[in-house]
Amino acid sequence: MNLLEGKTAIITGAALGIGKAIALTFAEHGCDVAVCDIDLEAAEATAAELAAMGRTAKAYAVDVADPKAVADVTDKIVDTFSRVDILVNNAGITRDGLIVRMSEADWEAVLAVNLKGCFNFIKAVSGPMMRQRAGTIISIASIVGMMGNAGQANYSASKAGVIGLTKSVAKELASRRITANAIAPGFITTRMTDKLTEAQRNTMLAQIPLKRFGGPDDVAHAALFLASPLAAYITGQVIVVDGGMLM
Amino acid sequence: MAVEEKVKDIIVKLLGVNPEEITPEAKFQEDLGADSLDAAQLAMEFEQEFNVDIPEEDANQLTTVGQAIEYLTKRTQS
Figure 1 (cartoon, rainbow over the protein chains, first blue to last red):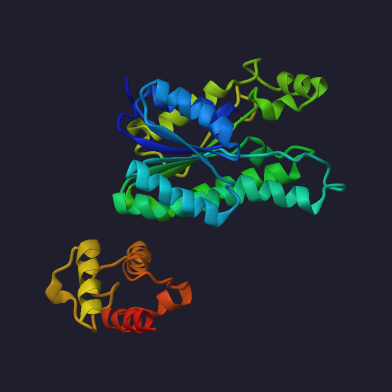
Figure 2 (cartoon, rainbow over the protein chains, first blue to last red):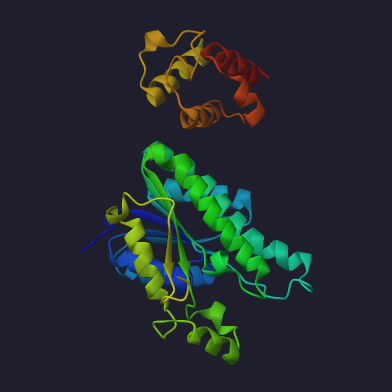
């Protein structure tokens, strides 16, 4: 079943982790992918995997926090692929710390990549999507954007921001048949969560009804659904993928 | 005039209106049925066609076809 036959997706932070899982899942369903990441080498490796599956896939190095770089790369992508059907805002970083000690730089960096990055890319694709009168925008938020997390004031704020941004964009672009939704993952085993301590992991596991951590594919499957025609009547929503942690 | 022709073409393509309706006094939103997204898109199409940057404050002033033609003529002459 090819849910994304003939579609083109821009995926940020697609070189590794959740972004890569989304890229692979989309490619399995017939989607061509623009693999965007700050790390060109890693992005090219992922693009090569997608191409080996028979898809058109190209790697682009881009810092999502840089508006001009994002506008330029989007122009290039639309030139090469001739359309953009799906945007997945997945690029994200953490700079954890207690607020009493958190530096301005750590606050700014996380907001810039996680929230402004979404703004930059949504703004860049909205022109092409409006002309197509079709498109779907998926932004990866987090359950901590809804419930907060000690030591992640910056990260939580950025992810809460992604949710508000998603809803506004959903309302603005709906008249052009463009949907915008967010996915709020819980604890997903990736490089980002590898940074957590054993004690932190055990605390989280105790709070998860389904008694396991999630994998990148758990998030990718939700992204596949939202990107597909099956979700055509869903917009402005947050799909929580967390094993039941937040109810 | 080249500018007027191009502007009319863009309006017809984007809003799907009859060329006869596109008079200098015609207001994009009230007369030609443009919504706010159309207005934003018109600005983007004008920017692309005439290779100019139209700042938001300027775009907000261009409520009629005539104003748009006048503005773009001025911008492309300088």
